[in-house]
Length: 246
Length: 246
Image (cartoon, rainbow over all chains, first blue to last red; front, side):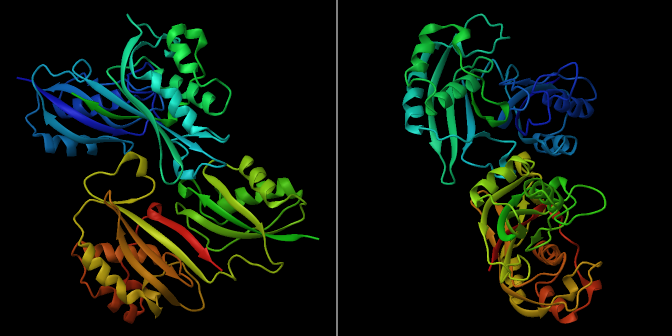
């Protein structure tokens, strides 16, 4: 009898085509499925809480999979890490309820978007931040983010190639944090997100912070519900999936 | 009249053959000299405080160069960064005394060696730490490091391909720090270092911490003065040049 496992994963998305298997290029899903198949002796399908795009990172992605293996979870962690590139690590494996599904059962997901605001980016961060050299009014960006919280139609912030039944999503929290060394981080928690939604929100907030858009732009875009009004999409490398709650 | 400039540099050494120009491969010296030559209109020679090996990083390397350019230091910073890969950043440029030489005038250099001690390495750190999975007795490693301080013959810790007049060096401080998230860092300051000296010291200390060598091994090796007794060389990726004092 197969059992259902819950995996918590961390990865550097720089060199991959994203979570999802693609016709060309290495995907995170594909690499982990291949490692699982070597252990289980047959093909498996891994479901992630959030299908991160190419270049997007994860501090704690969650995935579910049904396996026939008799290995215990701790041994699975070691066996998987031995079969994966160092850019992808399995932090933990645990047995889950038979019908557990990482995406459908997720109650909330948290993302963080990191910006290095200043003359230069430390070389060690260059793959993990968006470099914004111009001065930013972070207080204005914090005020502008407030209207995001609640249930809204986020049509203005979806990717142009999205196909979804509804563009209404509930955001539970959103705000900026500035670390001691000057890194800016936008943290957002929601029940679900449209494709590119966090990166388009950040793109808009940075235009507000640099004075190119008005402070009430987010509220206006939420009312407009039209994708053509959306701001530029912030680059993938600054985005981290940080937590999934069940 | 040429003027002498002092540059402070940060770099990720992963993809380079080291500081020094080599017949094959990209060196940090070579790339910065090429950027300087584009600005100055002629070939220049850049002298670094410490010629870091392939794969070694710098948080604040210092270098000196004589230039004919009339550009002011702040403009030089911007011009250089625009002409360098993102893995190499110029943090500052300032005018120095005419006879300033980054290596000969250095009074002390500080290095840090970073170890991730645990089951896995976060993907974002994989190029910047040495992964030591076995348990380490950090207290023993701290006690074992104490005899390093002072003037000693470090012959046992030099690289096998070194050619130097004397293997006597003065270490001003040495010790371990453990950060809140479990990263271990060995910090050492000295007037000068032999090639591979920090990495061989760390290799020995880790063997002490994991119980493969006795706690008095450092003291014994300092007395032995023989290179064949030396421990393995810790990998380059964990080493950072952090500061140069003048």
